[in-house]
Length: 126
Image 1 (cartoon, rainbow, N blue to C red):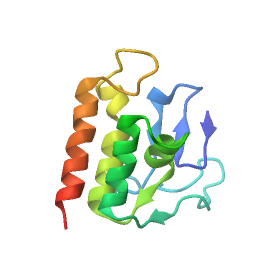
Image 2: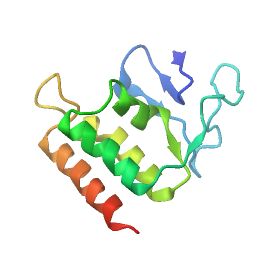
Image 3: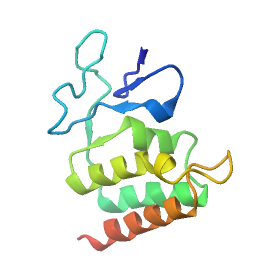
Image 4: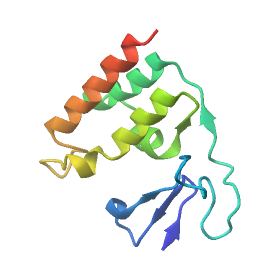
């Protein structure tokens, strides 16, 4: 078992078995490295506007995002804003809930519809 500083514990090399150890009322071990039990210096709360988060999602859908930006969003970020954090966690699970039709995709069309709905939700909040 490998512990990564982005807050995930990976069994072998299979990301589908990843355990999210981010903040939650049900997870007292949030943010701790499984081996050292120390707080990871890489886990910090991000403060982005809803528009900025919506842009990350839109760039991903359109294939315009920076390399690894999606992984940074789903695996490397944690947000102060509750809505943004809920959307991040929702997006993290899309590839398992809506498996891709092709190996070079993150999720299928239903998953991409969820992302579009998240974008609308973020842009509608003032």
